Length: 210
Image (tube, rainbow, N blue to C red; front, side):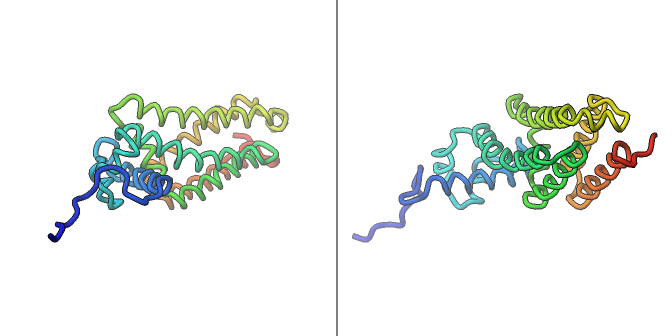
């Protein structure tokens, strides 16, 4: 008796590498959500894109919210951490912000979907998903605040209170995030370069008073 063609197996494929499968799903999730938005992205389309059954996707993640949250933690957060680390490793506020923005540009080139993914989370109907984006923004604010506080003496010498500089830099960085989320990579990169130049002219060694 000839056996008929096997039907797709629900669940984890035999012999598959769970960690590799998980990473494929998470990376494709970032791209899919960036393209479709949180509401428009579906588990079924994700399964189709990675060549898996819907059962395999649900084997790893029991809901879209769980999948997107994991994608943020395992794909997006390590990229963001690189930008924070670059800022912390430099000596001085300007050098720190410059390194942060430079590495942020590298991350954007490496993963162009990162900004649109963030925008999609911000616009999600699920409050828990929107909260992910809100935490990212708060982390940016906290990092800038600490960078300015740690270099208060340098900033005071330029004639500016460190908290005022932190507030100004925060507004600039949040604006850059918004631009990255709603524009193309070249425009975002040009704005990053301009931001560094503006900060340098404003609070650098040869700053011009406004």
